[in-house]
Each structure stands twice: as structure tokens, then as C-alpha cells.
Image 1 (cartoon, rainbow, N blue to C red):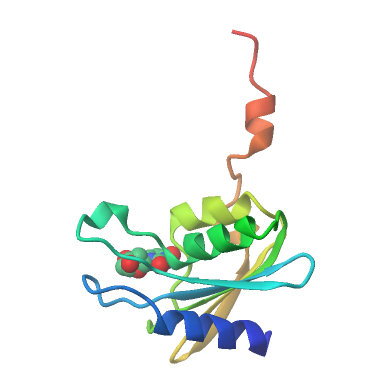
Image 2: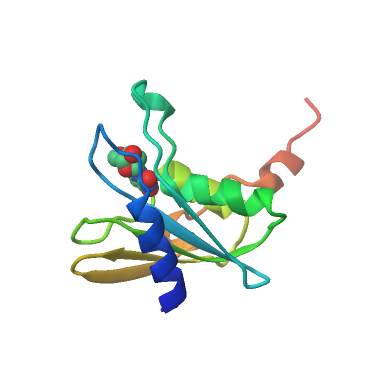
Length: 133
Ligand code: THU
């Protein structure tokens, strides 16, 4: 596991804004060209507007020109460590078919490939394959 990604994700977790859930999440993303980006969860008094850490990190990465993601580390205080939520799986899957996802918590870590977490994703191929009606 990349120590640098874990370090960056933990630093992002420190910035989590989670006064409602008190569930602090940090994410670090590595792009195909080796750059690292981070994000944290950003909650809101209007709960449904909350932004997950993974999606915050995707926004930063994409805003810096990234189009291919190779690895994601998500840090929480959960044991066992939490995997990304369903919405974040879909958002991450937009940017890679072979993304390694590592969840880190106080009791250790576990990892998956994005295809384990989101088999049969909805993707651009679905849009291209629609009929003419
Ligand atoms: N959260 C994330 O940041 N990432 C996930 O994949 C799951 C949930 C956040 C959203 C909210 O601020 C808190 O965790 C509790 O749901």
C-alpha cells in the first residue's frame, strides 16, 4: 500500500466537516500520471447536500486535469474500515476500469478493485448502445 496516499488521506480526514454525523472521512486519489489529490466529507445542515470525501477528491483531481484514476485510499474511524458508498463507486468508476480502492481504519485495511465494488457499472457504453427509438 502506498504510505504517501495513506498519509495524505489521513491529513484530509483531519479537515472533515462532519458536525452532524461526526463520521470523519478522508480520501486520497492517485492519477495515472502519479499525482495525488485529496478530499474530505463536507456536511450541510440540509443533510442531503452533504458531499462525500471521495467525490470531493474527484472534484479536485478532475479540476486539475486528471481523467484516469488508478488508486484511491479512504480513511475512516470505522472498524472494519468503510468501503466507499454506492454513489461514490459510480463516480470513481467513471475514471477507471481498474482502480484499486483501499479502505483504512484503526484496525487495519482492506482493499478491492472497483469492479469488485461495482460490477456491471452503468457507463458511457450504455449511452452509445441505445436504439434509435
Ligand atoms: N461519507 C463519505 O464521505 N464517503 C462515503 O463513501 C460514505 C459516507 C460521509 C458522508 C457523511 O458526511 C458521513 O460520511 C456519514 O454518512
